[in-house]
Length: 93
Image (cartoon, rainbow, N blue to C red):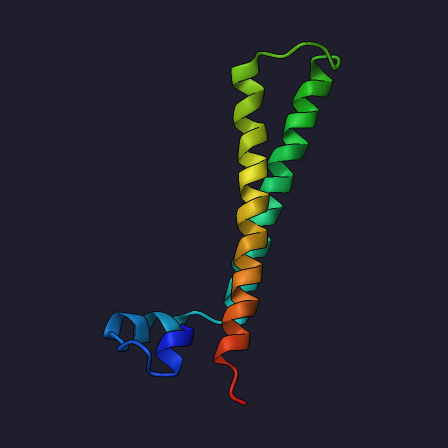
């Protein structure tokens, strides 16, 4: 993005279309959705653990939902941060 803004690399039609679609608001909304899905998955994992009296769990069952929670939260935070960076770089001075 930075190199294309200052004509360091040529701008392709695909990049033009992509940059017209992406905005800070859309990235923030998508990131918030991913974080919410990750937190929801974490809550379901804890509820599942609670239903088993906080005892031993099958590792393959709980690992799937816990890893989904971590990946969702991580991708959401990364999407929000990238959206803000996109907005800063695209901002006219």
